[in-house]
Length: 317
Ligand code: RIB
Ligand code: CA
Image (cartoon, rainbow, N blue to C red; front, side, top):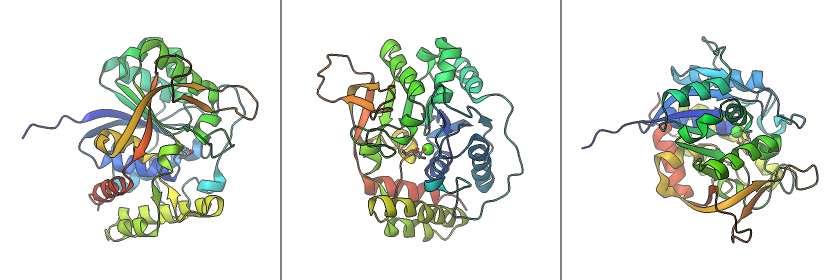
């Protein structure tokens, strides 16, 4: 049996219920080696997203370092999503009190230093606005060809969730997203986008939530309560039976790529201030003649995705 070499990853997010589940999935999977978690404003402010990353680390007794990053977008005013995630950003379950703090090094510098130290090895999994990655690329353009891959939860092939055109992570910082997607076009940076067209195929309905609870473990119950809170916004907004489990698709894609179907295409970001601001403009039919700069997720084996999540989260006590 060949020995498995874990794939080094940095999770960059705005926990946030689904970001938290992505951390749980990544840290329970031997296929991945979580080098660090970098945090950004997004669902809630930076202080709270950072605290929430500390909470998740405490919950599972993990050792990864946490590096706070951007507290605001590059240009546009900051948005936030307390309506979805609650005031704390992780409303629902009782939250353990962190016994360790975050690092002082900025997230962007951690990304730069880590990628430079391990050229070609590190995969970045951003699940919030792309401000930290954009800052890193502007501070150190040399890292672009040294990044193994970026798998981003954000954007959408079609409709948005924060405006009719834009998904939340993209709309939070369209200029940052533009920097990342243009870098992919210019340097060949391997970029995969899990947009709403994919993540809305994975609804954590009551039967799927019950599977986490039936694990009979502390972390299983934590996940079930998280998802039950997360369902509230989706029930009101969309009439669905549960929340769309967006962010864990990034780690799942590395662990079990056969669960997903992607298509290479050109993606550009609308940085105008009109009704299409923040839209990820996906050239599905190659009408621009522009070469592809991203793999865009189109299909999801939702049952397989949730089975993986339950099995991996079942590995915690
Ligand atoms: O639009 C969904 C995305 O926005 C998810 O990453 C969620 O956590 C929020 O950041
Ligand atoms: Ca997120």
